Length: 350
Image 1 (spheres, one colour):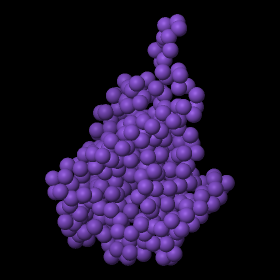
Image 2 (cartoon, rainbow, N blue to C red; image 1 turned 90 degrees about the vertical axis):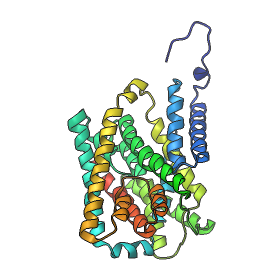
Image 3 (cartoon, rainbow, N blue to C red; image 1 turned 180 degrees about the vertical axis):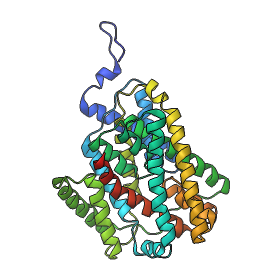
Image 4 (cartoon, rainbow, N blue to C red; image 1 turned 45 degrees about the vertical axis):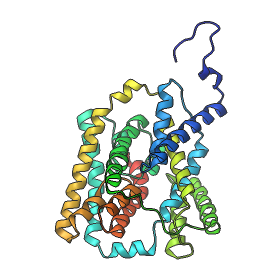
């Protein structure tokens, strides 16, 4: 922080107490999210919150956010993810065994191929290279970096570029050109079942904490929600405001972990991040095309289902292109669940 003349007052010093720092951090994230939401960008509450925090950092302010708020965001994100695991999704996946196997192989090829590019081409440490290359499941990635270690600035930079390209920029252009809005759920979970889901997820998460399971709050929410939906004890997507809150809190926490990173360091990351984006996209395209060849799935369906982007944006993009929404949705949900379960396990090996 730049020294001040004697007697001068800096607004950053006047906001030095932890509650005020946390409040300003929250306001910056909310402002960014609201702007992105007003522009109708996909994943607005996640990417907009991250941009708001980065802009706050550019003023010289050091953001900070309580770990408890991160845990709330992780729990809610887990509930939202588990709500997508329905009997209908399992039934769709049963009809595409080759496609699902290729999805698993492609997901790990994208992850370890991108990590190899970052390690060998740019000298990144193994943990940062691995976490930056994971194609999605940002909730599990952020939580794992916090527990295992790694350079959060590098990880978020790598994830953010792919997020903006595959989730915000490309789908937004195509969706606006096609005059199609992002798809929304037809049925939302009612307050009672959601409360059971949330408190059940919290109870399991606290058990996971005692057992020292990684990403306990996310996994707790996801497991309980999935069980309730698979057994049809609950039906419907997590209420949209709850999902937005989850992404907001995760975005704020992830970006605030970059506090103390200079803008010069952030600018130096653009070359490795572009290399990561190119390698991830090429591997995903190859995997999608091979799936088309070996399983007979229409090539457009396979390419969108395998694209390393976000669930909501890719489903909306598939809808705009007239593709099979169940095929695209089931594969993106399956990949998210696969990564959510495997990232903590692989992270321990690092």
